[in-house]
Length: 404
Image (cartoon, rainbow, N blue to C red; front, side, top):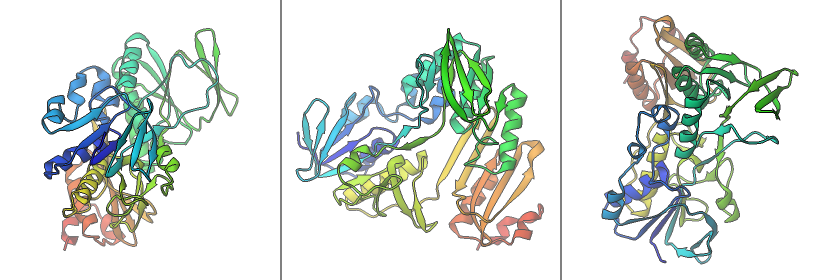
């Protein structure tokens, strides 16, 4: 079948590409292809409120089935694309059927990083999809002791949900602090303390050597020869860009699918958006591959605008968030290659922010229950504001005065 635009991947980026095309009055035929059996949905709640059972599945949907039908967006569910034929501008599905495109959008997202486990995989869980979240929710209702491998966002959000259900929770982390790749030591130690107060236990510098089975128990072997026994294990050790199709199609890839400022790949008729795309960020003057809802939505708008031959939206500053207990962590900007950082506010009162600088310029801010600093930080980064280190360190200084 012939389509004007085919979108491979029906997550946030893929769905928003289709939705934006229609919002911008694109009249061509659109096909959205999903490997899952659900309408396009939001993933962030999977480790939070959806995991608690407080949200119905339908509440996760980005748009209703009626919306896609009304707007003539065809959706294929439970389908896998096997091959992209760039010469014929075809995609080939697992069953051998073909669909042709004028423009192709790769919104393939990311794959979970997994551990090399040789024992029985029963009672070992990863979280990526609705079905994964439902399985883990069932686990939390049946068992009272779980081990989580990985103290990043996902691991800690699951820990916060599990402990509320009166679980005994042990988190194993290969590094020496939580969320070490994302936040500063002060923020790490703050969240560690919050979790410990709730009852979560941590084992740091825990390098996994192997996982074996003994009767109904998993035995996690650590590099220091210690062993951890667990009935069930939840693993959250990060993701990697899902680029197999792009690589096989001969597109340029390096830590994701390389795209230009229009989200076009090395083939002008093929676009990449979301977690799988590595793009040139004008604000930071470097290539970035970001895993966030905000980035997925922004790149979807850029790709849709390019396809529709209309003006591009203004580039937005990346931002991220995590909810753990009553604590809201929000990060604006990217702290790569920072030179200094300053903590402002009161950690003991659970309201503070961390300002990252490079050559006295604010490049990122992480905020904890501090929406005012988040909003201010967005302006400071957008304006490429320079603030002397001593001014930041002065807790009484008014940072608004540095805005021009």
